[in-house]
Length: 132
Length: 246
Image (cartoon, rainbow over all chains, first blue to last red; front, side, top):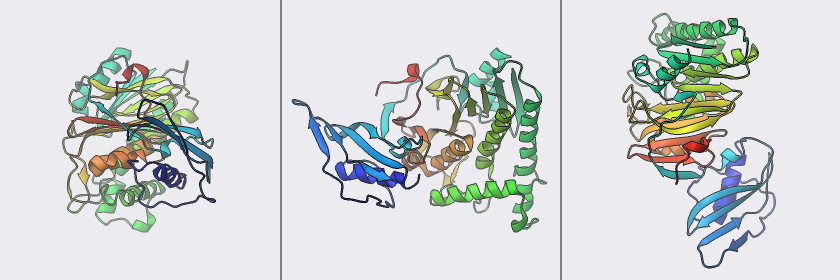
């Protein structure tokens, strides 16, 4: 599974110069030269969809499609992937958002109770009290 | 059934929804966590960890469990270029960051082996869940009673490393100084062993830890940087109503 990551990243990196993630030690495992990527551009906009070549990895064939908004990646889609749950995690696309406070019905809270002192004032304590 | 107990220095709350689930497995779970505290706490003078740290035990003849924990610690020290390090100069050996996720995951495995199918185990803010959907809120880094996102968890784990309660308690082993690049970082993964260790190690790395964690197989990341920006992976399992417009 370690090997699938550099291969995928390398494939996409070859297509898109603005790709934001660079592997430290790529291990190329592509057997034959990659065919030219297919590119479709919708007229009147800067949105482009780029499909990469099919790459054989040790987990099976992988093909990635990237949507570019200007020179920004707005979406990455797996066109073809091996039947392996960790394959999707091999393409780390990061999305930026603003920090917002939310309150909602939840079953439990992560990060709420690092210490016992914090627990007493936490949402988790309220949830535990509610359910007992 | 529900139970909350104070173990290993934090509250552990358990909810099991299976009808008529046998209570003895729950007792076994809490007994295991107490055993872990006795054997691996660096704050207990007679623990295996303290004895090793004082040079009183043969490093070649450690228990299989301590060997497993120390191997995990070493793997993550190497993977983070030394940012995550349980043997910091001038400090006691402190594998807590690995012991917590590892032991709670083993506890969850005990429940599963005893037949539990739908449960949610929260140990000091780190969560293992089975048979979901479970809605797991992630605490807002600046407000103890608010959330900053919601996770939809079916079978898996969520761990959060943050500064809010114990202050600057995670040290960047490369500098020996507290890691300050992030306010909070949450990782979802198939196991809590993975989620908790990756969250702590990424937090020690600071801002660069976000991409590092995102590239770990099986991990999805939600992070709040020191300048209050939110960065998450595209695959982070946000619950529907928890999604925020990008």
